[in-house]
Image (cartoon, rainbow, N blue to C red; front, side, top):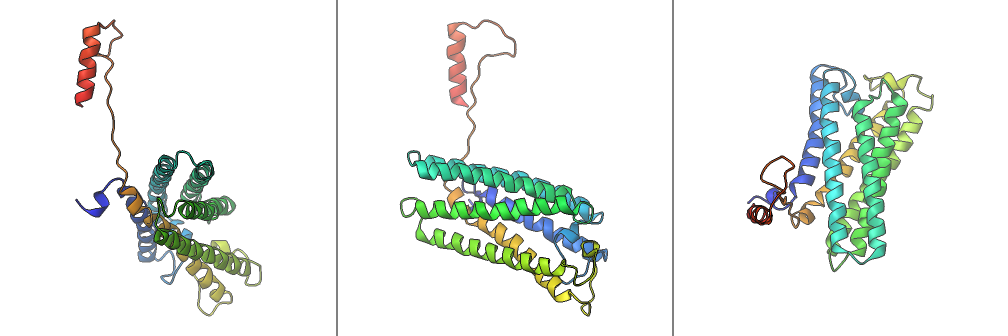
Length: 266
């Protein structure tokens, strides 16, 4: 059995690989069709013009569902490991709420493109990465509270490092974006897909785009830390038959007994 086949570790693996592929495939398509510059465009710019816009939207919508599934499994795992610790359980519920909000933001990013509905797209980005960063903080705190009984110190420090990487990317992107869109370098820069290195504001643009890519991959990297935890989780379905047919007919005691035997053998 391969490492990604153990337990439910396939969930975070699928989330990270699929989401990264959605960025990379959209980028390649946009570059081949000359819709954006090859040197570090905004991720959102690579999903603005058809056909890459369609690919970007479809793949990120699937990433949304993978993210929701991953965060829910994480919630159930923490709940099962700490059934009597009220502080951890409360933080765990907050974490799930924040995680679902972050996934909803990703869905907004996928379906409301930057050059068409910019402000809605920004709201989606704030939900995805802003609320997502708080989700990472909550999970890091949970890792701290659950050590050393459940978590090792190593996984806490790894998550803390990724969290700091994410936060530094947010700060860098925010500052460079404020400078870029302050009006000093012209107006209507949101619609601009091609940049000349000699233009004013090019440096701020590059810092902003590099920060965005760094932010995206720091966010995805956090879920790689779930792989080892998810290897300890298995999912199984319990089938319980309530009758031999789909009709609502009275059943005898013998029939009920037979049903239980059948259900137990599945």
